[in-house]
Length: 318
Image 1 (tube, rainbow, N blue to C red):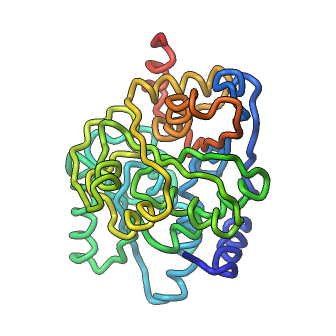
Image 2 (spheres, rainbow, N blue to C red; image 1 turned 90 degrees about the vertical axis):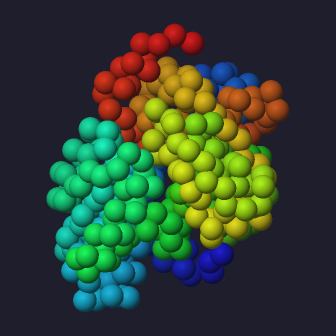
Image 3 (cartoon, one colour; image 1 turned 120 degrees about the vertical axis):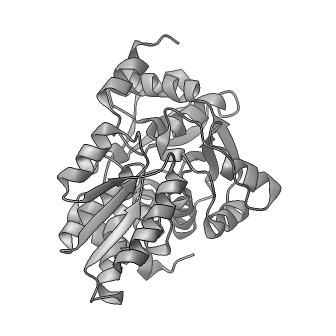
């Protein structure tokens, strides 16, 4: 997907902004899965999620491609918007972010703290994305997509860090719009590892799983109440092509499984995970018997969960 220099250039851009995040083994997680479990802690970036990496690389390239650009617009459920806000501010650009109504209160607050203009529109991510496109046309703004090669290159920096430290037999990767799992594919090729990649979607937002299995783009309704970072109704064609060529399987986890994984991460590592951030572990737990006794990689992609939501998750019983 990318040559060595393009990936290493992306790493340099990211590492100018913050240090590599840790990958860590936790004895309680090892025992829970009966495996050697490595967690990549992308909840430890300055924005609390992996998306920041993509934004930094995208905006670095945008400044060179479109030096006349004065403002951008993007749609998000939260972490992509923080990435855009963080990187836009660093480049001196105004940013408008469109979120669906009922979006995470604390993610909205985090985006506003980065200086973005926040617009609430529509009932799901797809409606917000369509409105962002309309704002771009109306006001002459550059629209930052949810999937783009430069976003993938930036996100690949965390997988390069991970594969440089450990090369597990399998990694479980949550799928939202596709940048995270396609970045994993690119980094795996760069590292030369044979690690298997298993994508994880929500059973309540299974468009990528259905599309993976049917070999074509399949639109699917979104009803997840917890894994908003995976609330994809319509897959990206380029991402789907890469996933179908390079990913071993795409599995689905329910909101209940995600909630159990959030509780497990807090109990075993004392790290806070948002819904999508715990989906990787939820997938590994679902396939625990298959990978027992082996080396497994999971990624805690983000920790930006509303306090009230997390309190309800922790209060529930397994």
